[in-house]
Length: 97
Image 1 (cartoon, rainbow, N blue to C red):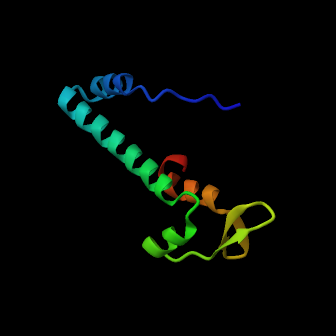
Image 2: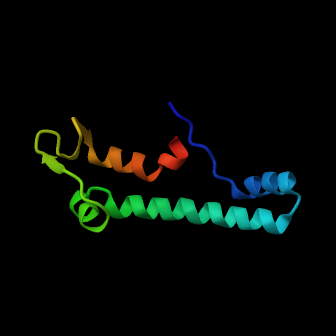
């Protein structure tokens, strides 16, 4: 089971401050990180379970509803992937590598 990591920004801020030696710069970095994480989460939640909205507002994707599993499927080249899984990977690919 994967352990949920604590995003303790006070601890992160202290680490950044000790590395760069500047509290103001560390605070700006912390603010930037929080903003990016929040924006990514909001983006994911806006389009979760809504492939038609994503396709209309972002870029066209080939998707369908799978009645057997009750999930949306995105059709990528020669493979099919569960839509929410694909969306999560797309939104957080900068973090997940």
